[in-house]
Length: 233
Image (cartoon, rainbow, N blue to C red; front, side, top):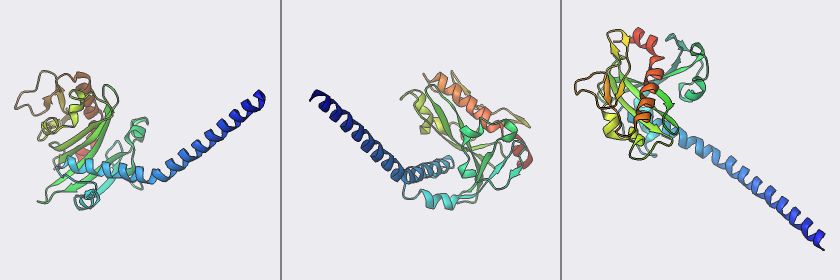
């Protein structure tokens, strides 16, 4: 009787594992299109935010089509690469490739008043996980039009402040170049001078996140240097 009971328990447990695994797999398969669509919308919302356009889940795609006029991919020399969809380029995959093999996405935007901007994605490492976002530039390929940053686990009230308006707004109008030399944007502990064209204040208590963001900007934006120098207006 005991042997029968043990066998029954084993069979029942095995069947339950199979049923649960099947249900989870089915749920994942059914939910995947929705999850991918949500990621697409979030990506478009972030791009719009970098040029100062607020959107909702319902309006994102309409506004994206209205303001983002063109997208393409360039290589490390600033030359256009045909046949690659800029929207589908995954930065953390590209970063693992040799520099000369990386695809660099570019998005062209036009505001309501006709002012043009280009948007590029950035991605790096913070204290607890990845940092990412978008940087938009004016057509001089030097002046920052706007930025949006986000994270996957920075400390609330400290490193997580990178995706707040007070922090992001400090980047507007900052310059990436001194003459033709790329210097990026510094994130300075102790604060930047008010008229400093190349630096912003670091996050109080978020030193490692600030350093990670500074490195992210230097590394990611720097890859576009050849393209910027060829297309500055």
